[in-house]
Structures are given as C-alpha cells and as structure tokens.
Amino acid sequence: MSKEYIHFFSGSIIEANHLTTKLSENKIKYIVKDDHYSATLAGFGASNYLNSCKIFIKKEDLDLAKMIYKN
Image 1: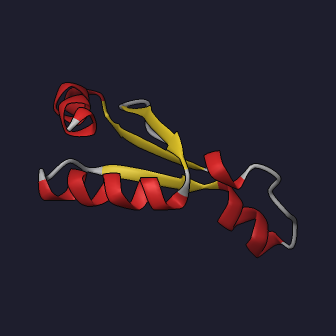
Image 2: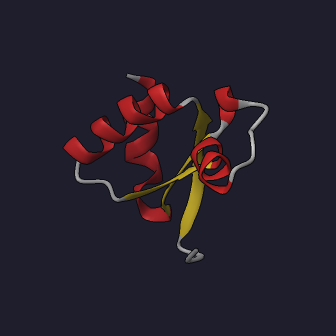
C-alpha cells in the first residue's frame, strides 16, 4: 500500500460501509481492508469480526474525514 495512505478506521463491515458511503459522497478516496472476508476466502476463520474492517485514506483528506466521522 502506498505510504500516502494512513489508517483511519477499524470496525465492523456495517460501520465501514456506512463510513465509506459518507466518504464517497464527499469525494474522499479510500481503501477498505476486510480481514474477515479475506480469511473466509482463504478457508480460515477470523475470530474478531467486529474489528475486521480497516479503512485507509490519503493523508491530505484526514481533516475532512474526521469531520465526516464525527457527524
């Protein structure tokens, strides 16, 4: 992953989907890493599915993303 992206959020897929919708509406680019889904595809189980999704955003979008997340 590019060094210009930083970790912004960890949570469930439901929370991540809600947040990515808001980020998309504000034209903020993001990357979602879903460890639970990846483990399922590989035939393993992920023990903590509540924090299995991670969202990464560009560093320059951090302030706007924080405002979106608070609201």
